[in-house]
Length: 367
Ligand code: HEM
Image 1 (cartoon, rainbow, N blue to C red):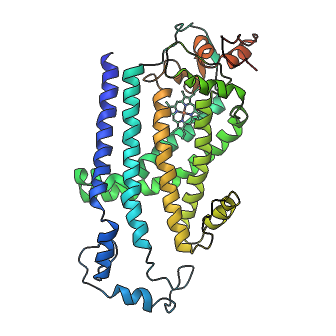
Image 2: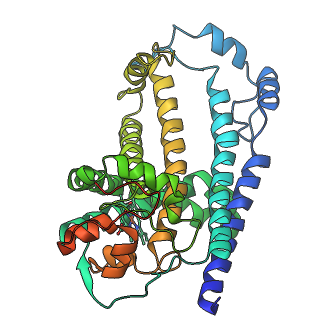
Image 3: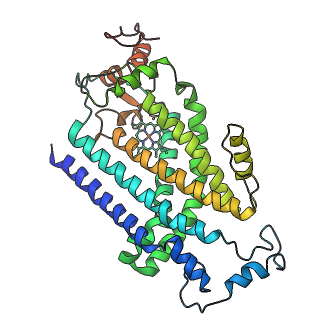
């Protein structure tokens, strides 16, 4: 193992521990449901804001409902009792789940790298290349990728920054960073949405699941044994999963994100749940505008955390740290012919104008 590889692994571990610290701080920082219920009974402001004298929240919750002068979708809703539960779930289990998920993916990748090693071109580079992604496809990849990375960093700051950045850089710098981070998050989101739509249009026809994928799955994609290369067309099953996660996850992020730009006005969940109920989910469809907005926050957070974890794995395998020769596809657009033959044999044969390679014993015949 070379020094540069060890540096990558140490860097990943340092990042993993920073995130674990954030998750652990989140774990201890938010009150339990019982604690907050007790505090509310005693008349304290939900959320435990400092400097608040006990107030008669119980009567306000019951007595003023239906009598407020507030206009708009939130009229008559001074206090929503489930709000505290929602808040505790968001700052408790959800942020812990995210912290552990990010930590888990980093640990799995480090272990995979140490145990399996880098996926090299078995036959070695041939020195001859073929085009894998044209200029439009590459521009779309980097539009989506760069905007996603900015969104992920600014979003993670909103979720975890208070635990591990605030103590380091102090309240003034953290407030400024988070304010501009939030603005950046909102504007860059549009670049991401455009990127996902163009990516869908350009690549969907190559990402339909077919019989080749079942054989690829049966062989574990060759990911766990050296020298095994199940046949694949332009994209293998793993890449098709990345594609659909980006498209469907991007859809959830976009809809919930736009709904959060117009809280209480854009209310997508009742209709979504009604549709899901056709398949027997049994979800509630009678939602208030506030519940809609709360669901958007949760949906946005869950989709973002899952996508970030998966994209970390995608970035690992796309760079020379995880695989030899893949990065050329999205950098220059060219990949080595031997890389193509090993990872995408059916596509390589088509590009080279050859007959599809003969299946090895026990392999699914090429289509
Ligand atoms: C530094 C970050 C990234 C690197 C190094 C990277 C690398 C790569 C590489 C090498 C490929 C081509 C694989 C092939 O030839 O088959 C690829 C494809 C792709 N990338 Fe990325 N990527 C990055 C970030 C992202 C992000 C953030 C997203 C989406 C949010 C993304 C989505 C995709 C999709 C959908 C494809 C096409 C299908 C696939 O290969 O899975 N990438 N990427």
